[in-house]
Length: 369
Ligand code: G6P
Image (cartoon, rainbow, N blue to C red; front, side, top):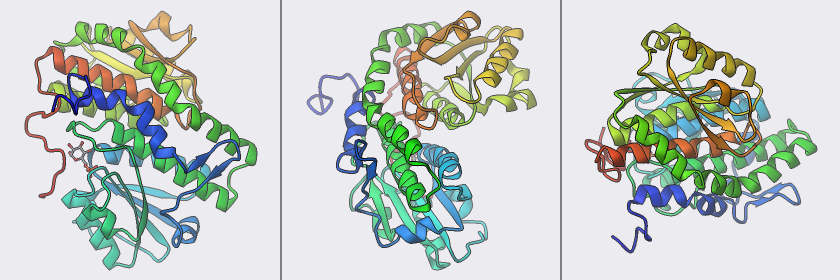
């Protein structure tokens, strides 16, 4: 066990710190930023079906469902294909509409989640093409899929998913951009920009990891909080959901993730001087809007912990604590902005004496309903 942890105290911390390498592994042999090329050997026969899909249905559970949400935004932005992101457990017990030309993408770290597998079988029986985005090679979901792409991020042991999430994002982005190229819905210049930035993601994550001590300090201030709110907009909205999920999974603190603007339709009622609000407020097209949301929280005396782009001078004046992340294309930002939230939840859980690698009541892969 100790050897496998590679000098880290817990698998979760090891897996968080592995991300620069595990993301590089997920892109190895696939991404050629210099020549603006993506090669996904696992999606060949059905590449046309995906490119011509009338609709894409993404099926997943838990953290994998969050990476599906990011993929929805990306598919719509770059490929102009409508996407629905479904909880496998809901999808399988509805009477879902599946039309000719619909493609299902199933996302699963373990490849063994019972609900996701059953949802795939249902979609398949109705004629859908299934593409798997899976980490575990040879798993049930990879076998049940027509084609797919493995994450290649290596085994994930900690129950709370970290490197699998960023691995999923990197693989999904490569799938999406290769579809955009085939569909000609992206310009060469934009593609080049994104692929160049994608190749730099491991280094950007290294920079975030260098803030570990600061994040640990912030964690020490909030370890006794009873509730947390996480807010984000656009590509950072699923990151808010994922940050909240990480915290509740391992620290047992109640946490909710919300689209920042929806806050005024409910969660704002919870904000007082005891409520820590983590706002993912990196420089992007919704920056001005999220600045207003931070002001709304501060006006109600909430405590703002903001994740900002390095060099931001405005938000540090309003927020109580800031964590900087490197500048990054907004479409790729979730790969970077999720990392400080993983560390924050890890440190809070450790300070509360929780078993981070095996939190109570949770399983690494849920193979029963
Ligand atoms: C469990 C795990 C989560 C995971 C979810 C989906 O709840 O604890 O970390 O996100 O299952 O698992 P999958 O293997 O299908 O991605």
